[in-house]
Amino acid sequence: MESPGTADLLQQRLRPLLTTALLIWGILLTVSIPCQRVHGDEAWLGEQAYFLRHDGIIRSELFRGYASQDERILVTHKLFILAGTAMVALFGWGLWPLRLLSLLAGVATILLLIGHVRRRGDPDTALQWRLAVIVLLASPLYFKFINLYRPEVMLAACGFLSFHCMTLVLQDHRRHYAFIAGAVAGVSVLVHLNGLMYIFAGLVVLLYVRQFRATGYFMASALALSALYFVDVIGHWDLFVRQLVCVPSLTAEDFRWDAPFWRLINEHKRLFRKPEIIFTSVLFFVSLFYHWCQAPRDRRYLPVYAVALIVALGAIGQAKTTPYAIALFPILALLIAESGWLWWQNRRRTRPIISWLVVAVWSVFVLHSLVADIVIATTGKRRVAIENRQIESYIETGTDVLAPIDFVFDEIDRYRVRALTAAELVITSVKSRPYDLDNLIAYANEQSIPAIVLDEENLARLRLEDVAVGWKKGDFEVVARLKDPERAVLKKTGATVRWTAY
Image 1: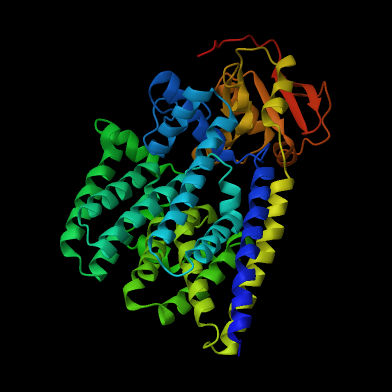
Image 2 (image 1 turned 30 degrees about the vertical axis):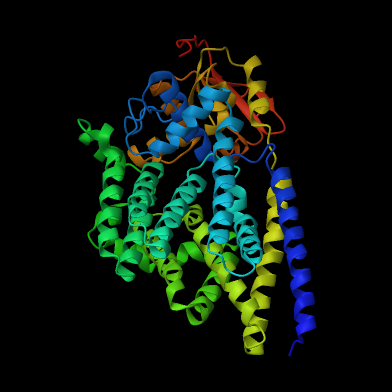
């Protein structure tokens, strides 16, 4: 049993300890920002922002010839792409202006999380918001993706803002905030279609607390704003359906009426898929149980909302990839922090075995996250634009180039870049052929592409690790072998430039 003096001493030491942890993760995040590893989707989404800026429509040259994406893309993260276009307009084309968007969304989420906790007026809110921010930043998935041009961090920011507005309805009985909460939830659908989860969760919580009039306000604005997703689909329904069917992560099973049920049953494959999310999930579910048992009844809307989000994501998110779970993290961090605060307040009345379990789960989470985030922050660094610039001396400006998808950074103004990823999709999915060198060269000839850049991964897959300058295959010849990173440049003999800049 702790004496009052011991409890006060622990209380005094805990806050600076948490502040030190925040400082450590702030430093790690700062270290991780320069030259962060490139995620393939950054190039595809960034290119869409580039063409929206230059052509006024979302389209792709990387995937020219696949699902008519070179004409127009209708199945995409529309508001996120628009925000990326704004960043390109303000700061020019490049990887860092696009990534700045996610970083700003992450900072906004942290500030909103702090403000949300403080507004509730609990004793020692400083403990709660510090815990919440630590959980959010320490989670390896969030730590990594806050640096990438992907929509999940922006989606999470919109979702948490919707939740915050909804709590004003629950706590202050301000029904007009239900309109705002619904509108923000609808906007989140424009950021990513998984934003439907926030509409579902908001509906569930408002019905749970029997705020029926507020439910109507919430759903009216949410449905009205989310319907804007289909504005540019009008008149292009055939293209929309064709591109929806061609989404690589979708299969015929995903279009069955019972698909949401089976997707939900398999949601554990996302939440417990890899160490980058497993420890966060374990900490959350332990906290969820403790919160439900210990929190006052008027606070149970938080676990209800969190569980509703997980159910909705499980039913909606057809691909069980871990990044989709980032949309849950601000709510999970809030619930974990509130549970940690409840345990701290009740620790002298809590059974020792439960306290030891809490300490053990927290310790494992913090230690794993620290190691994982150090690895993310300090390894795999790439100066992708400088690496790609080395190709200029081997391929004439204005040439169509079949290359790794990240070759668009920053060569999009010099070449029409066609992605090897798209070539593989066409070869394997459309033509039902194996992805090998013969079929890749046949694809390049069919598309009149006179130059190919192969990275280390494709060199290995095509069994070309040992090819040297002068090696030939059909009409193509290796004209360069580059190191750091390993690449080979192939050009078609006698090819002429047939493309000019956009």
